Structure formats: C-alpha cells, structure tokens
Length: 278
Length: 110
Image (cartoon, rainbow over all chains, first blue to last red):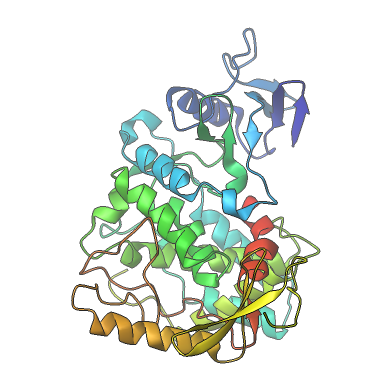
C-alpha cells in the first residue's frame, strides 16, 4: 500500500516481505544513483530506512514526478534503457547476496490460473504457452551459464517505476531489487514489443539507450534475443495469466492489452518450446 | 483531400501514395489509416527496397523495417522470435490504436 503525504510517499510493504530484507534493499537503493533513494527515518526500528508496523516494513520516499500516462510520445524509452544499462554494469557484490525476485512470481501466476479450473479458449492458450517455458524463467531452476549474470537488477520494470525527484529520471520500488540476470529487466519491455503493445521504434529506442550506455546484454555478438526471448516469453505468459485472473492492474475499460497478450500466448503455444540451448 | 474525417481527432484524412499503395493520413494529428492488405503491401515494397540497396543491413525479420532511430541492429544478430506480433489483418489505425489504448497497461507490474 502506498500513501502520499505532503512531499513524501509512505509505503507499507507486503506482509510476506521480511522487514530485514526490505531494509537491506532500501539501503542498497540509497547507494545506487539509478534508484530513488529512501528518506532516512532516524530512530526507526530498522534505521535508517525501515519502520515496522504490525510486523510490516514501512518505508518513506521522496515524491517525484511520474510519467504522463496520457502521452505515449513523451515516454523516455532511451532514458529507461540507459538507466538499466548503468544498473547492470554495477558490481553485483553491492547487493550483499540479496537475490532479485521475479521468476518465482511467474510460476505463482500460472498456478493461480490453473487452480481456477477455467477451461475456456483463452485460459487454454495461456496454460499451453506456460508449458513451453524454460525452467529458469519460472523459478523451477537456477539460470543456466549461457545466460548473462549475475548483475544487479531492478526486477520489476514498467513505466510506473520511473520518476523524477529533482535529479533526473530514476527507478523506484525496491521490492524485487537484487542479483539476477540482465535479461530479466529488459524482458517486460521486450514482451510489450513482441505482443504488439509497443512498436518497433519504442523498442529500438530502449535497446539503443541500453547499448549506448554499455549494457551487458547487447554486447553478445548474437544480439539480445537468445537470452531475452525465454524471459520475455515468461513475462508474456505471466501478464496474460494475471489479466485473465482480473489482477495485474490491466485497465478494466481497455480489453486490448489482455487480447494482445492472449494472442501472443497462442502464437507461443503454436511454436513449441524455446529453441536452442536455453 | 479525401472526404472522411479522422477517427481520432477533428482533422481530415488526406490521400498519399507510397510504394504504389494509397495511404490516408490525417492532416492534423498525422495518424495513418491502412485498409486491408495495405500494410503487407508496404512491407513487401520495403523488403524489396532493402534487398536492392547494397549498403542496407539485412532485414531483422521478413518484411519488418529496422528501427528508424535508436538502434541499428548489427550484422550477426539473431532476429526477434517468430512469435513476434505481425500487425493486423483488419484495417487499423496506427497512431490511435495500440499506442494510446495499450499505453496505460505499461504502468503496472504483474
């Protein structure tokens, strides 16, 4: 839960997020120029950044200016690519052993859809696509050596995570921050591109910004897709599953994203499992 | 000037010919309307142009244009996966359709 109070934002983290882990992530964000820095709370239970209320971690953040949701043309795709590249180039040791969340959430969303027992065409398409996922993309196995990592990753990239708090655009939300694979942070924008939610130009700008800032994923001579595809596939399946479950924040008055995601799952299922060594 | 109104703004649609395909473009918001099959025709023409141009890099995906800015895909890069979205079979409105309507969904995590 997030509440804005004056010029700060107060966030009550999920009940399942251990306050000590939130404290470690907040302290990490405070050291990283790519992330919004938390507000220090002297005298808090887990000072300097985390108070504990009813067992839940509570953090306080500066209130920045978010992106305009009504203006797709103003979306800073290049800037987002640059931020991710710089984050991925940091020493993963800075995370002090914190693992990024992400792939395990994919498995949970698919399982939730399966448990509903839905057997309509859309649900069948999403579950059939889920059956093709590489084990490392849904929390069933560690990432293979062919995937670039470990790097520091944000873990939950979307346009709602970008904010300008006075010193230029930064990423906010530390809940999934930690050590992971570079492909994961680019996988959601890649999934948007592959499902048709964003165009070639937006995707090209993001990847260009990432490559120009020396991001590690684009230095592979084969290009980013061999690593990116399995992760983008998993996030497409997850977002489609959440859409069918009525969760995940897909707009209620706009059926297009859900429809595009389910169509992408149909194409994934028709194509079979991930080609190559991944 | 054709005599139909832009479906997105108060502008009027103007007819242009690109690669032997008639395209309607709004004189106000620059949105483009393509009838059934027109997008595919433009893509074919573009692919032919790319094959004909000696210095042009190979197309990343059959019939797909390279990004106009930001990122030139170097030679040797593997193409985007085959389940990539391939445009619409129905008449579609490039500016208003996906970009405006789907944009809100890019602000949420899963």
